[in-house]
Length: 195
Image (cartoon, rainbow, N blue to C red; front, side):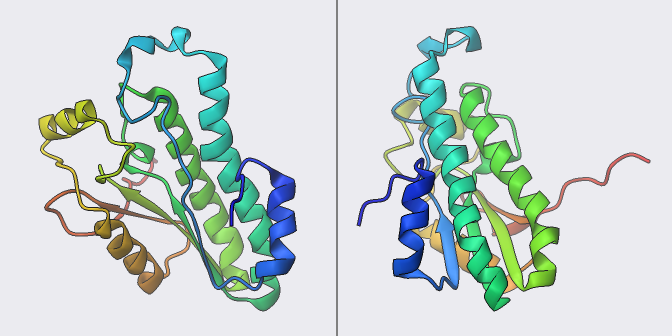
């Protein structure tokens, strides 16, 4: 089955066929270019063309919002369900060479943090998966080198499954789960705000 995640009506048409959902993983995502850090020549920011900007925002942000908006009512009605949103480590730290990608992933983390407390009383959990670099076509050779400079490394995609299982097992509303090469899976807990 093919679903254009950027089409809100396509999401609505999907619901009667596939509901109820117990677990939904909103995982579609792209970088500003063919792959993360794949073509830095389009930067600085003012040189990013509108088509590239609209494409990444539509897939990475609208796709997640439309997906969540579509599945939440059924989960709330059943008082059960877990939504996993694939963000990225770029959702909690800066990835300077691709600021638009970072923007979209920060938006996902913000959405998860905001929806977590709102959905919890209804028996629904939402979590963000924030892995470092995974060995996918999205990761360019340049990104692999960039990861090495921060001692991050590139992980096998199976780590994403482990990350999802941890989030599902812990079931902490609005949580963000991170993993970097050679490191354990951990819940990301930001420093408390200044008082």
